[in-house]
Length: 264
Image (cartoon, rainbow, N blue to C red; front, side):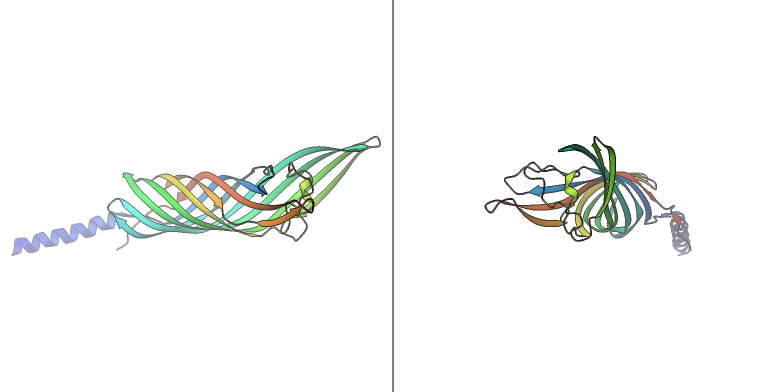
């Protein structure tokens, strides 16, 4: 009996010591990404339409992971957080307008706030080394979406410069922007940025490689929301439906906060 009691005491003390030394994974993380968004414009089924320039950008934010199922070396959980995204695109174009030539430059800047809600599958492949896969929606709110168009007009009298700022979230303000930012092969007067919605839903898929607290992550987000839908009528017999969606891909680093030992 004494031997059994001593053995139970040793097992109990050993378990407490071992558990106290086990690292507790911290679920908070900071992320910084390079990403590139792409507007996918469609102008009817019988018309070719050139897409807008790719918008390069960065994003920073924080993440938090909830684990709700663990089985052997597999964790299944849920991820959310808050991310700030900045995108920028610059395009140039030249037009001949009778007696003068106009050189256009458009700088498009977009500031967004994103809330991801992702399902997480986390696989331990070696000590402190994981492969993780993510799937789920991301809700994006556009805090600012503006374009600055600069026209340098050359004529016999010299050069004149005009700067115009378009707030694409304001009703009707973006209708005039088509001149140099987006060009179509059918008609150059279609209202491309009319009544742009500030809210977008994307569906994302991604993966990562993690060693200790450092994670390298990449993924792709498919735009599900038509940011605007317009009908452009060229003649009484022909019209086109214009839609706009935004996809984006990203790659970058996620840093989980240092792990803490369990306190007893």
